[in-house]
Image (cartoon, rainbow, N blue to C red):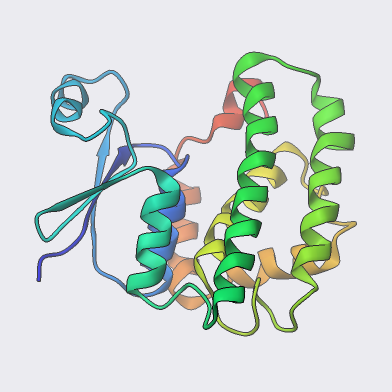
Amino acid sequence: MTVPQLYYFAIRGLGEYIRLLFTDNGIDFEDIRFKSRSPQWREAKKSMIFGQMPCLKHDGKEYAQTGAIMRHLARVYDLNGSTEDDATFLDMFFEGLRDCRQKYVRYIYFDEGTREDLVQKTLPDCLAKFEELFNIHRGNFVIGDKPNYADYILFEELDVYTHLDAKILDKFPSLKAFWEMMWNRPNLKTYLEKRKADGVWISVVEKGMH
C-alpha cells in the first residue's frame, strides 16, 4: 500500500483539517504544498478532478472536495463514530462549522461586515451553538472520549478564531477546554509548535490580525 499524498497550498486553510487528522493519528502521508499561482501549481491542477485543492491521492485513486476527503478518511480510519446516529451527528457538526466558516470568509476576503460584528456577534452566536452541541455527549471530544473527524475541523476553526480575538473562547468553557486539550495531544503538539514557529500563513493576516 502506498502512502497517501495530500496536495494543498503552503498555507493552513482547508487542507489543514486533513493534515491534523493524519498527524494526530500517526498516519504517514506526503504533504505536498504549492505556492499560489506558481508554475508547479498551474501544471498540477490540469490533472486534478476539479482543478482545485485539497486533493488526496492514494493507491491510484484521487479524492477531491474537503468534506468528501474528510468523510472518506473517517470511514477508512474509524473516525466516524460507532453508529449511524454518531455519523449523522458528526455530519451535522461539520456542516455547522462550514456555515460558520463561510461567515468568517465573507469578512476576510469580501469585506462583508466589520471586525467588531464578527468577533462580538457573528462568531459568538456560532460558538454558542457549538458549545451546546458539544455538551450533548459526555467526554472530551465531539462524541465521547475518542476523536473523530469533526474534532479536527472544530479544533482548526477554534484556533483560527483565537487569532481574531485571543479571548473569544472565554465564554465557552467546553470549547476552550477542548481547544487547549487538542494543543497538548502528543502527536499534535510538536506539529503545532513547528507550524507556529514556521509562521505558516493564515488568512487573518489579510486583516492584520496575525
